[in-house]
Amino acid sequence: MSPPLLKLGAVLSTMAMISNWMSQTLPSLVGLNTTRPSTPDTLTQISPKEGWQVYSSAQDPDGRCICTVVAPEQNLCSRDAKSRQLRQLLEKVQNMSQSIEVLNLRTQRDFQYVLKMETQMKGLKAKFRQIEDDRKTLMTKHFQELKEKMDELLPLIPVLEQYKTDAKLITQFKEEIRNLSAVLTGIQEEIGAYDYEELHQRVLNLETRLRDCMKKLTCGKLMKITGPVTVKTSGTRFGAWMTDPLASEKNNRVWYMDSYTNNKIVREYKSIADFVSGAESRTYNLPFKWAGTNHVVYNGSLYFNKYQSNIIIKYSFDLGRVLAQRSLEYAGFHNVYPYTWGGFSDIDLMADEIGLWAVYATNQNAGNIVISQLNQDTLEVMKSWSTGYPKRSAGESFMICGTLYVTNSHLTGAKVYYSYSTKTSTYEYTDIPFHNQYFHISMLDYNARDRALYAWNNGHQVLFNVTLFHIIKTEDDT
Image (tube, rainbow, N blue to C red; front, top):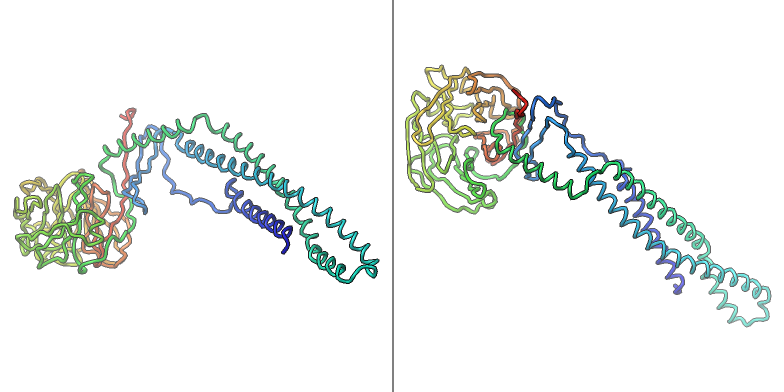
């Protein structure tokens, strides 16, 4: 192809790409695309005098901590977000405007070239017709050269017409961008009484206040269980894995205890990442075999039920020795009052925001669940509550803020069916479903630091997220 054709082809290719880009980008920038954001869950509206209502949740699918707040007074948080989005949109439009300006300059330059070429082609066509009328007077060779040249240029005539149309389209785009920029600037003036940096600082201040509030906010009522997230697949169908709810933020050690009997080996990992990769940092050979899977690590020590007994053992990981042991009076053991799945799960040790607990059953309470708060140092029972829920009918249980939550099964379809508050000594029947992904749960324990449920789900170590409901009283409340 000749140089004029190559140059014109490049210009037309650029025009096509710009037109396609504009058609795809402009609608999304001005909000005309058909994709709509998902609608968030609706929260119950309350008056300012009712105080702050907080739905707190441990983490989202990306691992970020979530806390949803319904405040007693309206704030400008949503306005801040809109202003920031508007500023970003204006920046994009300004960048587009600059790009269109550059394209327009190039287009005008090329357009002048096209007009000049069009004039030359029309003159050449007229001259060729004149020559063709008198072709007998020309040499055959010269005539053939002119004929080939004309045949090469003829297809450009409709292309040049299309190019002139596209040049007009670029001019229209430029005008539309200018109008859009003016409209967005007007919207910004209507919305924004605040500078972006000021808005950003206000958001950071609000976030700091909210975090301080959440540190004071320790207890709430269970509203929902979501997940699970599968952390690892390992071990037998039964076992336990846990972290220490009283450990510092930098201490993320994980302990792993496979099987529910005939084992004394506890494996330690420095972090969840090491646990997933299998990089053990240490192993402990306990002096006694454990029974069941309902152990707990609390304040640096492991609490477990000694095999074939109702004795509770406190074992220090740092010292590598037993610090205390005590019999849990009248507690059934060795599959007398286990959970529905068996496995010597008679005595369930657990911890929450309040302290250390033991959940078990006795003959004196007709095989129904007994809740005892334990002294973490001496293992003495500080106080007990007798419930009316049969231990053998419970799938698993866990404590949150002094309330025991009991599941109705360890199999598919399990849900939190019953709760007992040690604060009010009252119970209620609940209906909080959760997804038993691998069909068989042999361990389910709450971790107050992580605000999550650790579970052993048929050889899979999984995490469930919990959502708690809180009421924070304001100063105006009486």
